[in-house]
Image (cartoon, rainbow, N blue to C red; front, top):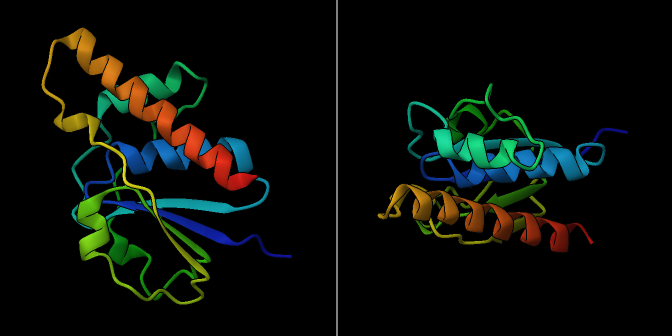
Length: 139
């Protein structure tokens, strides 16, 4: 039996969606094929997203931002998880095979302005919120 596809979407595909993809692969990779993308992908995954996931044993250092266009019409998406307001507004409403469209807005830690210590703390806070939301959804 083929595993259902999950696509996690945000604007830049550099922080929140990458963290969510990492957690979903770790927690439910045996149940789902997991992908992430952005409506306006950045050039690279944010270094602090890589760092805070490494702290909890998840390696996303080889990941790269991808455009949602890579998946539209090419991948039947069972679950679409949108993790930011911008992507929710600009995301296509229809994907082939879509069963559930979920909107889980999280603050963008890349936009946080503060000291280096406060910034890494914000990345950890968002990381932990994403993990908790995924754990609840998987139940």
